[in-house]
Amino acid sequence: MSQMPIPEKTSEMLFIRYLLQTFRLGEASIYAPSSREEFKNGYDSKLTGLSSFRELYLQFKAPRYSKKGRFTIDVTQHQHLMLKQYPVSTAYYV
Image 1: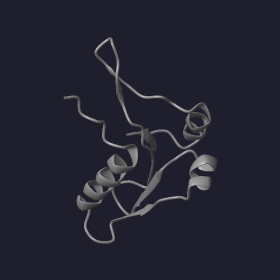
Image 2 (image 1 turned 120 degrees about the vertical axis):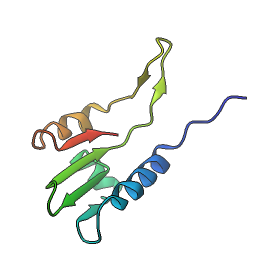
Image 3 (image 1 turned 135 degrees about the vertical axis):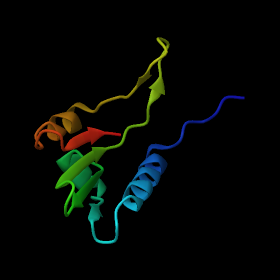
Image 4 (image 1 turned 60 degrees about the horizontal axis):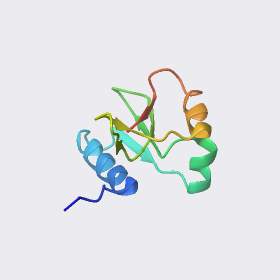
């Protein structure tokens, strides 16, 4: 029996939930843009921290297992170009 992959949105919600658990109350906040804003800005979630980091821009992608034995993601060119415009070491694929 083959297993269905976890939907991208479910992965996003679980990741954010557990990430925020690592901070004390008020140390970090999250901004989840609308679908239109996601397209315009290139990210699914933006985390803002008050001490250990300033901003993180996260783009969630569901991985595929390739025939070469690797996990790959399908990158949307428009989103990828937008993410590259953010400061170095602040935008990531998850």
